[in-house]
Image (tube, rainbow, N blue to C red; front, side, top):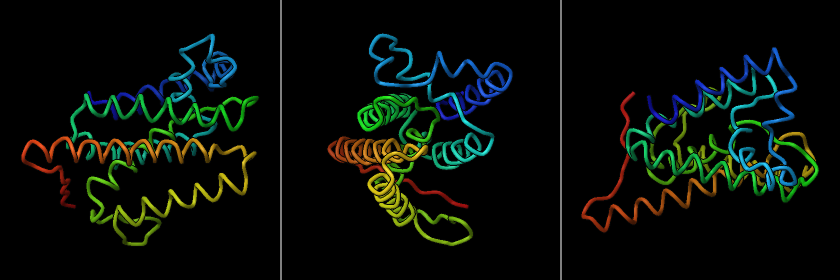
Length: 193
């Protein structure tokens, strides 16, 4: 199985356990204060979700975009993207919300969106029934999340984590493009629907 599939599978398994044992959140969610002494929290919060809608939205993005990205960059690079987007998202969330706990895989979902925006900005996508490109959709969601993070910094939605994940995806995407262009070829994802 690939990284994207593992993340989604583990998320659904943990979600089912979480429904039966809601106190699981107390041991696996992320807060900067707790994560300093309990380092597993930097990663485990990714597999927790607040509702079925929360896990479905994250999983749809991770599977629909992440599968194509993972095909292009390989599972080892997808693992790096997963770890870096999750850790940076959590760090930003922890700095902005030092007393709150965060859950969900949206930092990774936005990381996947960020790297796809760089590697294939012209990829045709449909968002809420509207045909557009990955570049336009990715940047639109990024700026929307940035505005929401500024206007509603204390929302129950971790907009700053979304922003962090997307930025990590953008940086990692440019890193990969530069790395592979030096070897004589440029990474360009092409998908046929």
